[in-house]
Amino acid sequence: MTVSYVVVGAGQRGTSYAKWVGENPDRARVVGVAEPRAHQRDGLAGRHTIPAERVFTTWQELAEAPRLADAAIVATQDTDHVEPVISLAAKGYHLLVEKPLAPDEADCRRLVDAVRATGVLFAVCHVMRYRPYTRLLKEIVDSGRIGDVVSVQHLEPVGWWHQAHSFVRGNWRRADLASFMLLAKSCHDIDWLRHVVGRPIERVSSFGSLTHFRREHQPAGAADRCLDCAVEPDCPYSATRLYLGVVRTGHTGWPVSVITDEPTEEGVLRALRDGPYGRCVYACDNDVVDHQVVAMEFAGGRTATFTMTGFTPTSDRRTRIFGTRGSIDGDGEQLSVCDFVTGRTEELTVASAGMDAAAGHGGGDDALMDAFTTAVATGDPAPILSGPAESLETHLAVFAAERARCSGTVQRVIP
Image 1 (cartoon, rainbow, N blue to C red):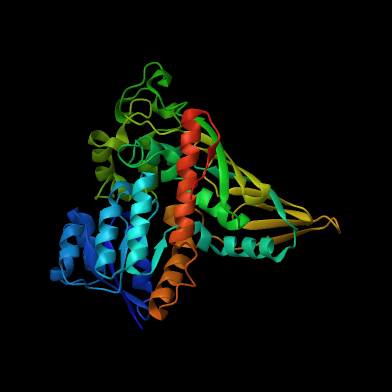
Image 2: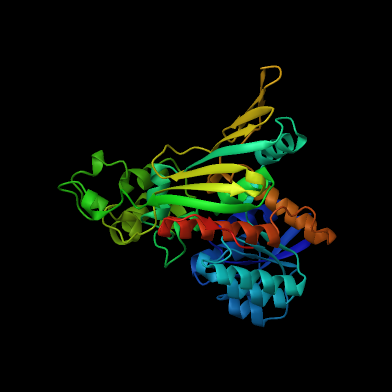
């Protein structure tokens, strides 16, 4: 069976998933798209030879049409997942939904309840679960090789320029435009920790703030746009250096494709002159945190700490897992497994293209599409690792952690 897809939201994420479909024509095809922006809509439609009658400006137009495909990929902005998901589920579309499900707890519950009522197949794009690296790590943990997991340390190094691009200047800079930082960026990681530990998260505490990217830290003599700024050459967050540097290498994809539809030096300069990505990082309207720590207690008393920080080089996640018979250190490509009985350490390597969105999240994007397509083709949900139950559970843990941060309390995660 060849699985047919419609893509709702033809931005970077929707386009990435559709790319896998285009590369696997014997297994899947894209037959429709809904996207309000003409450049993104027409580009995806052209790449997949979608006829004009199946190209829609809004998801509402798609939902009003007869069902066009087996499944829908919903990759709209964070605040625009709930209504298209509910409407398309009612039409019988199987659903692959970008994370987060919704920016508040009530809507997450409403979305999951509505989807469950229809019986369609449903997966959340928690791509970290699907990485070859994660699969190997999970196999080692589940095998009992390091005994029972007692505690975990996990770091998400967002990267100084990615923090500035997405969470200071970009679409996820403000909670009211998208969602708070832990949900927008790190619900991947809270979900991943639950998956690896294999137990529900029961209690959380959290600390963090918007510490650096504030007006009072703007250097003396700085301008509100990088192109006008006398101190720009010495600024680590220079938009001019970042975007012109990337486009001059001949790269026209993310992040350049986010700031302009014309990925040339001239197009980038116009975007930096007039658009949000040319602003000084100390003169934006951002309000999401730039660093955060979460402490978690799992069922059975297991614990984990998670650190998200924007003040790092760009690199993969780092994880240390401490068990009763051994420990594991991982960096996204290599696992160092120490055996307490023999004292020996084994080094295991998984090839990875990198963990950022442009590199397909270390193989997670492709593996997710492979698993979901298999599930739809066979009618068997078993390949789906990020179904509604655990995805809702880990979203609720993220909301509890943000309540804990804002209130200075320990919060219980209530299913």
